[in-house]
Length: 425
Image (cartoon, rainbow, N blue to C red):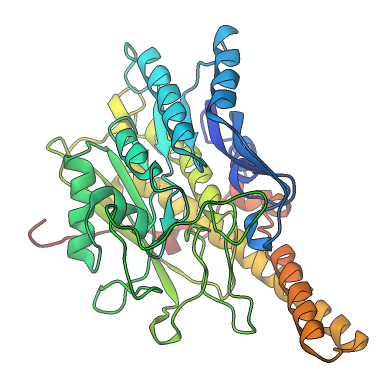
């Protein structure tokens, strides 16, 4: 096992949420990218005590003015020479606008050096037909699409951005084609899809929302944490936990309709050709019977490093948006190669996390049995509260203890990408 880092030296500006305890948002992303040799500067869009899936949280949101001041401070000291911008959760439309200004400034600085700047945009808006940001953020995210080089939406977010309801592979390919052709996004990865044997989407929600008429919305706040965001969500904490996977963003409620659950998740990506047509690849991964927070942030961070690595290996780092020639098939794209390593790492880390979580919860159940249950509604509610908090703590992703899986992902062959052909798209 070589100790030499394979990821080139990369300067990253990461703009996302932050928590004091746990590994979500920038707490996760910064650690992962630094492990892989990236030099990370972080601007935090919220500062919370813990992720919101604990259902109780303290902290504050960062204003657009504060974000602007921090970036201007970097700029005045000539510290804004970044290779990559990774942007994640933003709590307001004004914050989205400010991050857009930062992205455009960094992109303008790189005008004379093609490939010297790359923007990875995680459009954190909602999941399962529900917005959990203010509705006025959606058009602001759409306005950023033409600036971004790679976007990482989940299925619902892809539907919002493309105005296309995704029900099967054909509509999925259509949505990606819209993102490539209408918004000129060079690279897309849809990070969480449930597909049945007929390649139709399996939804945990009976209804879908369009960008014009979202079914509901919820704004995460420091005073009330019942609304999910990329730094946490409302998991199913009953004895039969919900499905979550390595690439499933942590923005869903984690609760599925029992008759529709699948034991796999699909990740589908694409790099556009010169005429903005999709080149689709697919990777299927097993699902774990646990809810994990921070997996979307981990996916994004690993993708930054591994895509940079794959792009340099393919000698594409001096080309605009790191796009491959049209002759490169989908399964051989640097984006596909990067995603393979990303998923190999995540599956290894989550397997270890799941095993440790099971041990911790067995200890907890034994402690509860010894102490007795008590009687009455209040006692039952208190037991449920204690169990929920213990489960959340036990299922915090154990990335710090398993850095080896980040540096040297094993069993990559298990996650090889395969090309997806969709008739008529």
